[in-house]
Image (cartoon, rainbow, N blue to C red; front, side, top):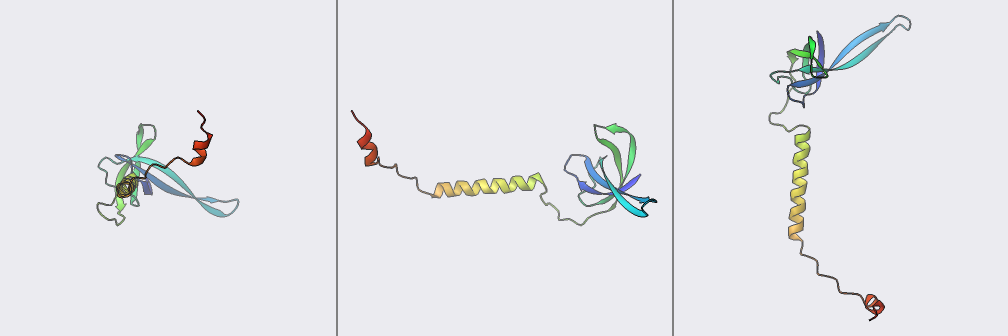
Length: 126
């Protein structure tokens, strides 16, 4: 059983949790913090980015990385509902940029074909 905070929830039914462990080294009389990323199964997709959660080991693996399961959400991070995150926000920005480019292209008049220059006419010999 470990406590940590959610750093990614972009995958379906999966969260990535960073768990901290504190170590004290007698030789140097210093304490260190070790952070370990853990993939956990979140069946009902309760946890979101920034939440503090408790995860417990499954005893077996779900896929190549998931070895933990979400036990409970201890603290929920305040968030804005219906906020686009990650790739959804990027896709919306890209879509808007493409729409603006299309509007600019429609408004600009088509360029007239350029007349041949006299230098190019002088070089052609029949």
